[in-house]
Image (cartoon, rainbow, N blue to C red; front, side, top):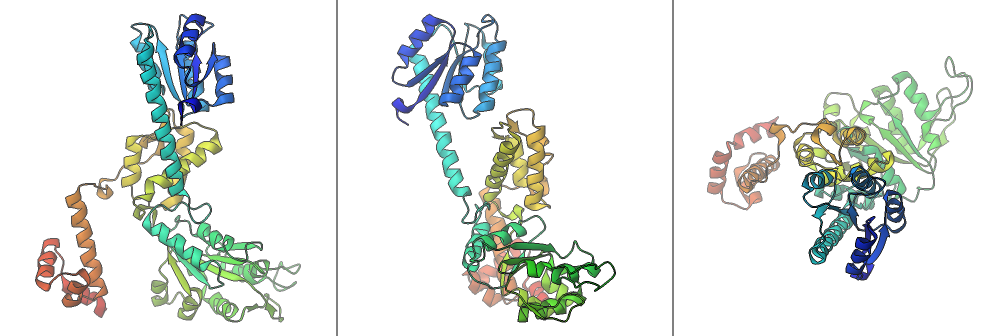
Length: 460
């Protein structure tokens, strides 16, 4: 930002001092105001980056109430604006009150123009740095998929898979804990596909009673059962030409799974109570928060259906594992709900950031968004605190930046993964890790691990 483009608003009711300040800052794009009303009007009209404001404003220039009120309204309308308040000589108490309310800095009269120039120039520099930071953060937040924030490696990998899979008609299975955004990703698959102009139809297999689910999916003919007074089109037919999203397919009753398998294989359905085969052209996306392999072992899910719905499987990482993307997502959600509630909040306090980083978030992104939405409503100050979020850092999950601890944790994890992949075979594990067998034995001892335990798991 050049000095000519730098917009400065001077709020001062003393005509002589106002004239002096205008001359002092003639290199800037200067706007002036003499009271609260005109100051807010100039703020709305010109959106200055920096405001130089006297605390003593009419109608009671000897007090500070009007000046503090102007400051508060300025920051509510333009929270990123840097406000430098000008106070009377020795009036540090009110200056500190202004800073506590969000003022960037203060300056005591009498005015020394050179010192004031340095303060104003520093304020512009800080504003520009923060603006650039917001711009870069926005670039990071921009996902290859509309509406999805992907800043961690895990979520970026998910987005890349979504982009590759979307143009095809392959049946896709989304695996992830509750609240990780499975439906959002399913909608992204639809939006990026060639079917985006047709319907996206979602049905939650866990939310509909077993005796009604077949009718909801495939429809029914008039008189098919008690209460079927007219023919009804099912979700599958409604999705014709578009995408059918089967959420929580792991909860689908076994009695219905055979019919679902036939539909996926043949792309034909029969309405309940009907005999006519109806061809349908739909793209199918499924999701579950359960492990399909466990369901198969327990006899709760057909293996042949699993292979049919999982032509492509996408694993969605839980929020607690998104590491560097955690804070970025939280800030994006904060901005979203501030705009919805028309509230000006500058960000998260240090204790809130620590809580977001260390809390385990069992409810994932859904829980995070609910907490932030409530915090935006309840926050009293300009920053959302841990108390506003209603979240306390859990020491058991608290992250550390100590390099020795990070290295120890990463080393242990790598060994355990290598042991799992090699089924406890020491030679293969050492090869995967790129170390010698003696070194591996030393590291196993160091981390309290045993290859035999992984052999047992493989045998089971």
